[in-house]
Every structure is written in C-alpha cells, then in structure tokens.
Amino acid sequence: MRVGAHVSIAGGVDNAVERQREVGGNCGQIFTHSPQVWQDPGIGDEEAAAFRDGTAAKLDGPWVIHSSYLVNLCTPKDDLREKSIDSMQKEVDAADQLGIEYVNVHLGAHTGAGVDGGLDNAASALDELDVPEGVTVLVESDAGSGTKLGGDFEHLAEVLDRSDQDLDVCLDTAHAFAAGYDLSSEEAVAETVAEFDDVVGLEHLKCVHLNDSKHECGTNKDEHAHVGEGLIGEEGMRAFLNHPDLEDVPLVLETPNEDGKGFAWNIERVKELRDGDADDC
Image (cartoon, rainbow, N blue to C red):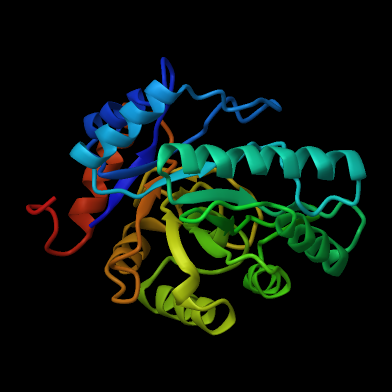
C-alpha cells in the first residue's frame, strides 16, 4: 500500500523525504512554496538532487505537488487567468526538476462565467501549459461550494474531454462526500466508485486525498477530520480502503493535527483499516 501525507518543505525541499518517513509514509505531497501567495518555487539544483536521491533510496513514491490556492483555471478574468497559467507552468517545471510525477490542481470558480464557460476556461488554460514528459496534471475533485467547479464528477470528465492535455484525476474523499457522493457505508462506496468509473473512468484516478469529513454528505462544506472519526466514519473508510478497484491507488492524507493526533496516527489508522496490511506496512 502506498500511503503518505502532505509534508512541509521548510528548510529545503529535500527535508520532505525525512519528514515523510517520520510519519510512516512511503509517498506524499508538497507545496513548492506558500500556497497563499504568487511565488516562484525557487528550488536549487543541489536540493533538487538531494530530494530525488532521497526519494529513490527511502520512499516508494509517487510524490504530488499541490498547486497554489490562488490558481483559478475557470476564471473569466484575464489577469487572474494569466497568473494561474504562469503559476501552473512553474509547478510542472518544478515537478520535472524534482522527478515528481504529478501536479495537482483545483479547477477553481467560474465567478459568473457559468458552468460551461468555466469548464471551457479551465480546459483552455491547461492547454496553454508546456507540460514536461513524465509529468501529469491531476484535476482534483472539489466540495463544490459557491461557483467552484469540480464537485460533480461530470465537471472532471468534461475538462479531461475538452483539454488536449493528457490529464488525470485526484479524488478527495472529504470533498466528494461534501459534494454529495456518499462514502459512509460499503454499499455507498460501491455506488460512488461505480459512478466515478462510469462518468470519469477509474483509469484516470491516479491519486486519492484520503480525508474524513467534519460535515454531512452534500453540505458542500470542506473541513477534514481524522480517518474514521468524521462523518464518513470507520465503516466508510474501511470500505473505501478495501475496495478492489482502489487498492493500488496512492493515498495522500491531508488530515488535521489536533486532539493529539497527527499524520502518524492517521497513517497507522489507514493501515489498521486496510484488511491484512497492518502488519505488512
């Protein structure tokens, strides 16, 4: 099982490798800079080499770069669109430099352009990227509040269809649950996975953000909970982790650090809920 967490790159991106090992992960996710600002990754060649070497020696992979929260691919505003494209180009270039396979991005909000217009904007913005060979952009599922797109599986499928890029998908369990896709029981997980496969295609699912939810299904509220302790709950998380079509998909946790529980606790919880894997991982 490939499972890890979103870890800090403070002090140099190469430090993420040991931080991942410290929480018990063997794959994971990073920001290349603060996600709240427009900023160049600014990764030096030596630390990039140390990151690549450390990953090859100590982790199974893959790594995912999560793009800036400011990126809005659906926007109808020219200035924000150009900033978003520029930021994404720097992220895919950083991924190439670091030997990272995936760059994850939210579609963003259409802010009045409408669903169809927003999806067209996102696809055309992605088409402007020069994505290096060996790097794939993952479009992430969203909780779907306001005019944000990506809450419906159809939105993800449409962007993959409308774009000329070879795109894939990251499914966030808390976001999908908040957007109305039930994951709280074995039957619900089976139905949601089947719907994803029918609409998007499981062949496009390259990463899962494994998070429980502090809010009810369909509320469009995005707040993560510890694995098995939110409203998806233990039954739902167990069913998701043991679904036969999902067993090889890398899992990245973005769970909270609260109540004396952090990433290490949540990764152990994942191993306990994954039948037969607790003693092997």
